[in-house]
Length: 131
Image (cartoon, one colour):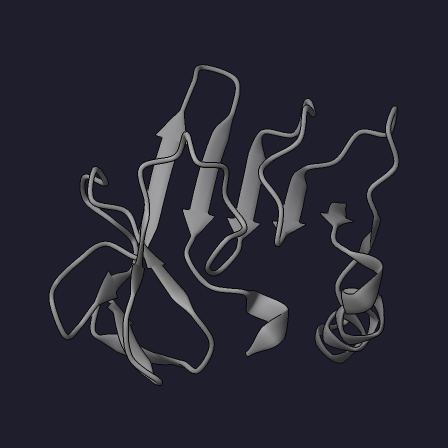
């Protein structure tokens, strides 16, 4: 089951998204167990999920994260040869090693992955539900 954390302004789009893909999900509830937690526009939350995916563009991450915005109206990102146009803001993660997603224009990382023994957190520098 996927738990989704997002601002109320995104709820209608999120419902449509998961209905389209026929995926088991619900808005995150504390105390529930999830396989994956998707955080949209906010930092990761405290959870026991083994995988947390964080989608957020400019200004969504705290100042303690080492990030920078990529400039331009359309940013093309690529992952293993597949290209993804990002029409909203896109963040670059200068300290990312072996990123899943790269900004084509300058080769900067548009993703960051952190791992502990119990949990993996993948940060993607764009707003999934704004695209």
